[in-house]
Image 1 (cartoon, rainbow, N blue to C red):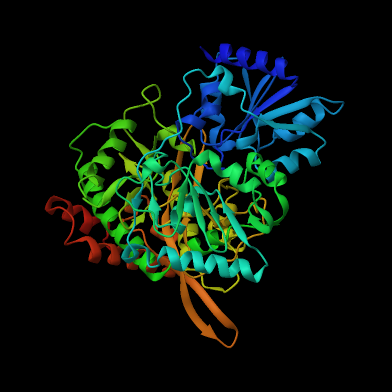
Image 2 (cartoon, rainbow, N blue to C red):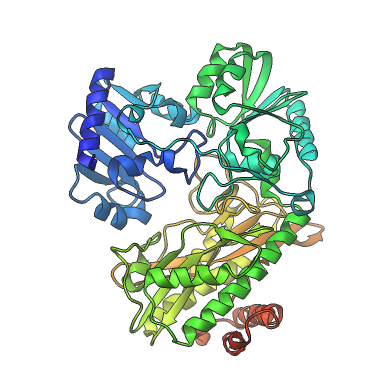
Length: 585
């Protein structure tokens, strides 16, 4: 079945169900950013492969809303189909919720899969006057070869890697719940479950999680996931029940208070709780999300080691590239970097799909090179290379912009402006209680002075051998749905300003940085950042005259540290590059 045929088949099922529209949000029952094959529903119905977007199908229209990261990609991938792209941001911005409200203000039922509709999302639709029907997924009726739910084996992380035992984590969650009069904690966020139980999985590419729900009670812990996962791991401190049995267990609860996150608990489970007798709901973010974000010293040390191992691979790779021994394309250079990482025995795989955009492709923020779009890296130009790795002890995420051939003055100045913002954020000292929202301007300021800007977030949280995008912390001008979260000691975030000039070039510089204590004074406790990423900047793109002496010193000190850490670990034929790349400005 082709795209247009799939849409027509969906419309027939909508008509049978008495629905005016059907929403596909592209997530799974856990509100995951990245999903396994079974829940690649947005991709299946539309052909669009990006990680975010909302599809709305009516009897006469098929629309897909995406943000500015995906305008170019989406337009190309839906070409020749019945789909029309809508923009979530920018001058022509609209939202699917507002569109549905205007279209069906006089009536019309809008359907969506109950297992992918979160409680808070349903409320937002209803507040706009939309009659939303959470039901069985209509795609199950037409997607005849839909993949099954994965049940791959899980792996236990020892306490000497996690720093805390499962029992300690569960005891702290229970204590926090007791303080708020809560008896049970229902958790569906996959990285939270993996962190709480010190388990890692393989159900989703590049993200070491497994599909499950977790119910922590006053004297029991129930994990809802296929029992076949536990091939070499013995469940300790929790019982394993079938994945789909969670609804029956929830509906059997009686006279208790259950804490849950309405942003991460779907309507199928909410409906089960509604059937239970005298169950009170306490809404709030999972306690484990905040505990997980503020990494303990063992986790931080693992992250440091992972970044050193990553730095070795990156320098060996960069030295090889700079020797000009091979002709690369976007696809082949990403594979060359992956091959270098795979030489390290503690490397487990990528933390996300590598972004390698050369020339004008670098201006597409989340460009993903394919066989159809792949271009050779020849002549003069910039390559935006955004990649990361999962290691036994931590997770990495790094972007370097590489120069091929000669740079224009515009490219050098753009790079230096971005570098100045990158350095400003990493070097800032700030009082305890400061949020990433307050710090975001630091990375933008030098671009603003020149009438330029970038529109993605400056920083996202990163997990400990977990999700490369982790909350609740972030550095962004956009506040999102919840209140801004204060940066706490141990939180790891990215520092990644950039600039993107459509049709010309793009560039981004990204390090991971950890919140650490700076000083205590009569004015309170102050924090700053420890840089984790260990890899040289593109020295030939830096305009020294645009930097202050403090900025020059910061670059030189960073490069001195990189050289000192890596010089005895990289390949012999990489040392000349490392010495040159880290020479003082």
